[in-house]
Length: 419
Image 1 (tube, rainbow, N blue to C red):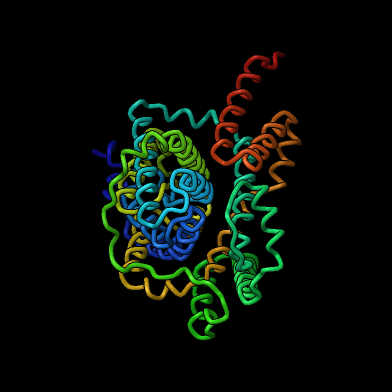
Image 2: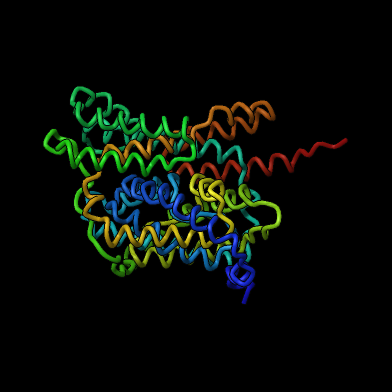
């Protein structure tokens, strides 16, 4: 049983002194995970409440079945932009119900691919994705997201297209900027960046959200043209079934998102493991992440994976076991049941600021420079992945990233250094 339900390993040996650390870590992570999940839902073009659902069921499922003690499983900037890109293709200008059905279908497909990979025992494939290629891919994703969110920070609207089209339209609409919205956005950026620099342990996204809601409630900013996220339904999410007619359209992108979800989750789990903890099992991680996607998708969540930022918060706050993630999920549940009317007052500019700040973290010139110091060919792979995402598209960028990883591996194998 412990092999198939890894949570039994830490539950049966749970130590009393871990309780306080897990509770504190879960509450701290909730202050970061829930606002970010809502922000990421807007990246995907989904209603804000989908982000809250994403911070609920998937976390509980992974806590039971995952092998990483600190990994926080909700969604990430990378997954959000990939989901948004695909939904824009299969359900353009659709209503919320149609988008939710398409999102559910995509999440269930992602989960099915991950479960299938677990049954086939191919978790070792994560070892063959080139780190430089991932650096370039994530940097491209970060730039695409920033350009996508800046219009919300300025209070302007236009039809979204490719990266270059969005950039051109953004420049053309600069004269239409809403000054009150811009001031709110700049204030949110100042709060987020200031807390990150001077009070790094503070839950910056939660503070920004609280300030934004308070400003809307007491200053009447909505009458000045500052847009809010709008009505959020109260209560538990209802069951949403996948649309089988969409499977043929969505399976290629689901395969790419599944690969990215597993790769990000594995990297985060390995990066934050400490001595004395079980080493994450790749095949069990595939199963846990897959079932998290399936279970979450059926209850309104978008596709999920382990995120580096929230896992770092979880670990640095002192998480000892997956009980911390269960505490975070309970906070999301309480938010759904009691805080929905309050969250509906949140400015769109607040969510845009949260997304922009954390998306910039994906763009690291230092990492490109470090790669260049080691091997110029690897730098070329990283740069090519970056350009591919920006100029060709995010889903196509995954294909480019995977192809470059395999080409890089084959090139090195064909000319091994012999001494």
